[in-house]
Length: 210
Image (cartoon, rainbow, N blue to C red):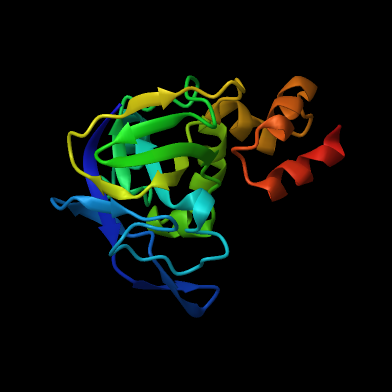
């Protein structure tokens, strides 16, 4: 996996349900290195800290490999890296292979795969179509948030080096599918509940399905 774009966003005013709101989802490429902090990316905009930022959502990664699929559906948009609100656009990110809990060295930072992205209405606003929410869920390639174990700078062309593979085999895509499945796979449920790299509140929520 390799960084092909570093993206940050300024505070942007949007209209939702006839009310003004602020968002940081409008991220655009920058030539600068990004500093990955423990709870967010330095100089980036995080408005809703209940749902964004924090230890388990310090930085969001999205795969460049999926852009062609979305461009074919939304060819009318002005496309650039950062369209999904990701801080890092990654070449070779594969949600079916990467385990939650994997630890990687990138730049001079150390990060751990923590949880997939669950889309909200602000993604629909960026894409000018709320239908993208169901499409994004159905496509099952949500990208991933990371927890920052060691703060540091990352730059374009920096590669991710696997430092430690999680012994728990739960992948990003398996967990993402589990979240939205009406009938939960019991084996995947058990993997998720046992995976201490996931936020504790999410694991507690899943126990009711056993």
